Length: 318
Ligand code: AMP
Ligand code: MG
Image 1: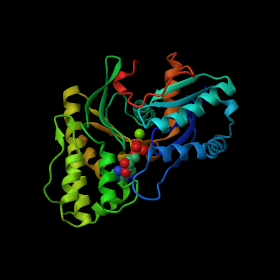
Image 2: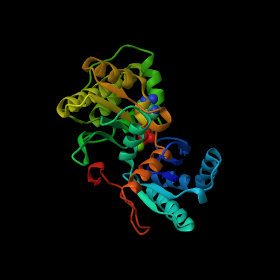
Image 3: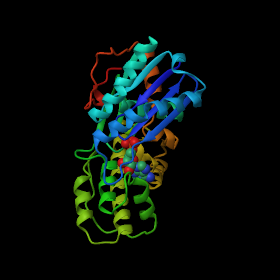
Image 4: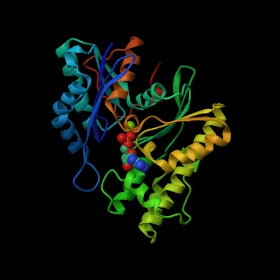
């Protein structure tokens, strides 16, 4: 069966089409604010205005039309309410118009399942790091358990806040990474891990108040924040007795974070997987794939169902 998936939890509108064998389309358009961070209302407006254009691209990439798909999936949560609503309204409309089933999926679990689909990972501890989420997730006894998470802001949000302070436009991750690569120098700052939980807002405040150059500040952020993530991940792997790690989410694009996890896994004799960059960032193909899996399990969502802005991955019954 072919499933069309709509992603609209935050800054990106993504529309993908998958079947059991292939990813047939993965079109997207990201909202880029003219200055500062992005406002949810403006991002939602972007998604609504660019919907038909992105849908057209998905049709062209796949050589299909919406009338050829057997179901429509959408990100039901977690995410920004206005953004979620835009995707949900579009998904309900397409489902009703074409008389095909509708399925609302959990965005975090979609990141994991596209990861296990496109890499060798089977039952990994997942480090999911994005603009809105930072979680260590492990499937155990019929449920994905959040074994560690940020207690305040997500690591991607921390990167973006620091970037804004350094006058780097949103999204700040790639430029912070480039700045950090230009130096080996760091200064001592707080190290944001407690057991398997994280806390990044203090580190950001501390760096904003410091008076070092932007390269050293960026490098200090990366070395402290990413080492803390790797420490939490390693502890979770030891606790769960698992020798597979999966890294996903927008911050998974970071080469320094990847190489730190690669070394840690190398030392433990564990496998490390990370999906292609197009599947790390928010995208529609992962929503379509998660929808396909949920439909196979007999899960459908009525058109009257509301979006779930605070939907945790550990609330989902498998
Ligand atoms: P997502 O919410 O999963 O789409 O991811 C978006 C987040 O990923 C934003 O906070 C970006 O700043 C961050 N990001 C993107 N590329 C990088 C990178 N190379 N290094 C660190 N963070 C990144
Ligand atoms: Mg995401």
